Image (cartoon, rainbow, N blue to C red; front, side):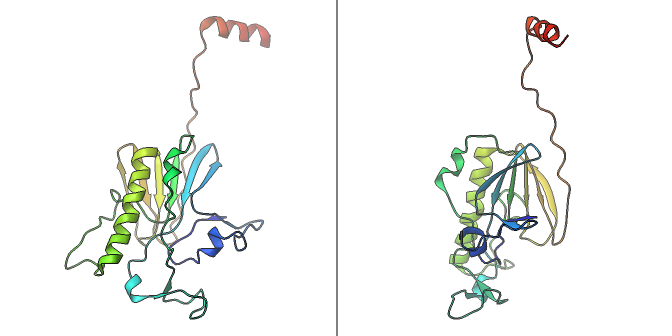
Length: 196
């Protein structure tokens, strides 16, 4: 099993080489890891901003244990990299903890919003806009995320997206065969002669 970081996960286990887990059946991935699995190029982006951060206590080694239920990390959001948009291969799938702003759930501000603090609002907005930029530039075929504890699905542009609820499991469709090119007739004839 391979894990990407959520907003309630201790970032050390994903981004600090001393703590990263690499066990026979379990490993944690550093943020912004690119994997090749079943023929897919998969970009993994961990982290998200806790919507209830203003009700939590910032984690600090001297005050709280890392698994304290009401703590948050100052670096809980995705690690923003300027060069992530320069990936030199086609990204088929993005796995992230939170989503681009154009995916559900919609982000809104107002009386019924869970987000009251201005700085928290800006952090959430900046995170989702950053992921939106990644989606618009890399144009993955699929994007899977969680964070919102509900199930959503839809499409934006060329990307089919799916938000997974808590304990929801889905199967990624098998990759369709790619046509790498069509050989001219004379090349086909040469290949037939060589194989006979």
